[in-house]
Each structure stands twice: as C-alpha cells, then as structure tokens.
Image (tube, rainbow over all chains, first blue to last red; front, side, top):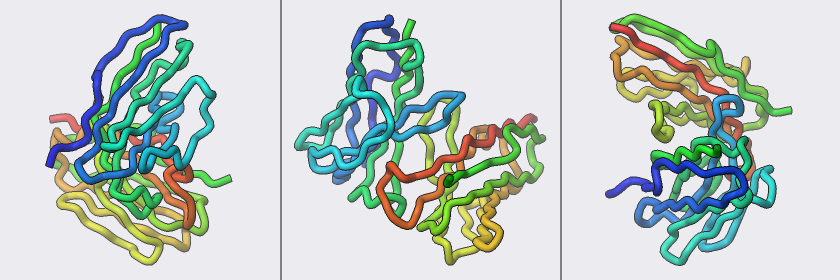
Length: 115
Length: 114
C-alpha cells in the first residue's frame, strides 16, 4: 500500500505570493491533518479534514486554509506569504482521525522557503 | 499548562552503544504517549504507542517505558546503528480531543558516529 505523498517536495516563493501544497493520503484513510514544523517551534497543528469537512483547527492566521476532496486528497493554501512561513509542512493521514487513538502516517513533507 | 519536555536536546553516541532519551509530561489525564522517529527531511514515523496503563513497549531495538506516577517516559535504543541518527519526538494525547490537542515535545536530536 502506497504511503502518504506530498507535492511538491520543495518550493521557493517570495513574500506576498501564495502557495498551494498537495497531499494524497493512504488509500482508505479519511482523515488528513496538516502540520507546520520549524526548528524553533517544533511540530504545530494546522488543521484536520475528515470527509471533506474541517474538523479541527490550530492557532494559525486565516492566511492558512485548506480543503479536502471527495477522494480524501487534501490541499493547503497559504496566501500573502511571510518570511516566517518558511518551514517544513507535513501532511498526515489516518483511518478515522480519532485523535491520539488513531495512528497517523506522515508524508515526507514540503519544504517551503520564502525569500 | 500541559507540556511535554524532552531531554537531552541533542546527543552524540558511538555506533554499537546504547542510549536513553527522556520525556517528561504534565498532561493529565492522558490517553496515550507515542514516540516518533524523524529522519532529516522526512516525516515522523511512529515507533511505539503506550496507553496510560502500559509501562513498556518494544519495537526491535527500541524500547519505550512509561511511569504514569512520575509522568516520565523514556526511549531506550540498544546497540545503536548509524541509521538511528534522527530526531526522536515524544507526543502525548490528552484523554479527549482530536489532533489539535496533541502535545508535541521539541525532540531529541541523536547522532550516531562510527
């Protein structure tokens, strides 16, 4: 069974631009979560989608948004990029997304650099 | 405030040696505690998961222990290999809530040298 895939793997943008990241979960997984990882802050939860609905949201500004499609694939969008948005963005999928009881499988991440 | 603190921040050991990583948490009550391994530039991979009632869980050369009374967990790596070089992240899940409630430690960066 194929793992979680994320595209693109690397991205370089300039301040003010917007970016869209894509995540394909493991087949059969309905929950997709997004995380931002930076050296200073570690892993921070962005949001979770389940059956095309945002179920949980972290403490990030509205510039960060996402969506999930009927095939469970998910996209994350960041508008008006800032230098501080430079990070590794990780997508994780799980069967039902029942919080800590359900194992999350992480993708390789998208490394976003904002210049 | 619920917290997860890991120590040491970084560690260097020689290949073949054992090491122990620590995780102290204040989350209470909690559902489970996980250890993840994250290779550089890759996503985290789950190594072990323990509920509050378990006190040890093994995965090959990795053994996690949990002391719910002292709110401490440790990850012991036996006969280390170069491929063990990675960051190890402790994650605690509160008794209720979704992934937005997970509390991540900052991680321990392990370097195994030949």
